[in-house]
Length: 221
Image (cartoon, rainbow, N blue to C red; front, side):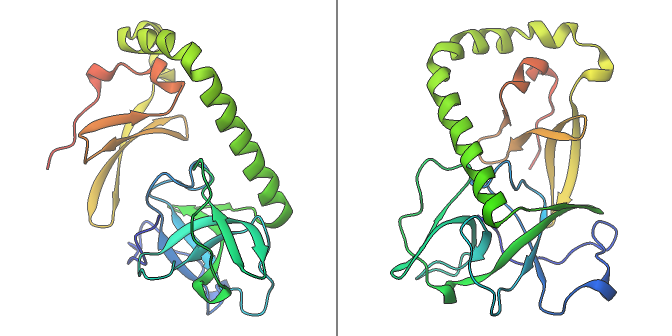
């Protein structure tokens, strides 16, 4: 899911206006459905299709029927009846079919500050999507066996206590959409974020093994 177009702080995001196509637009990504392909608080660079054909594997920005809430998912099938989409982090494809008029553009890149990262589409996007879903299926299959051990180790903070300071995750604050967002970084990788609604940290496996949850700050209202 996305939260629509936003105004970008000039110090956070300054694309080259001279080389930017006039029809290109940007939107802020929010939600988990396209992780790890897209992550909060990245800015999406979106290019309208115009007369270009829709391709299976493209990550597209669209408006579903009967709603004004934009969504970003990947095309998995194009048929005469409509276009099917799927979130890279979801377990089921979307229940609705899109028409070409619902699709406003293709996500070609993601920005975090001044760093631009290309988003694959077409055949390369299809291969990446297949790999992500295969990995997710394998992870779900092993979870019942490994989860008790993982939970015991992470709750006791055994590994986190002996991890050298230079290799420990660090908390950073991103200012996006008029609010502060706490995230957890390991090197340059985002491994967790603070869930404001549940008032708790959500940390990706297996990185919770490297974190002592008692030392993490809680975001204030």
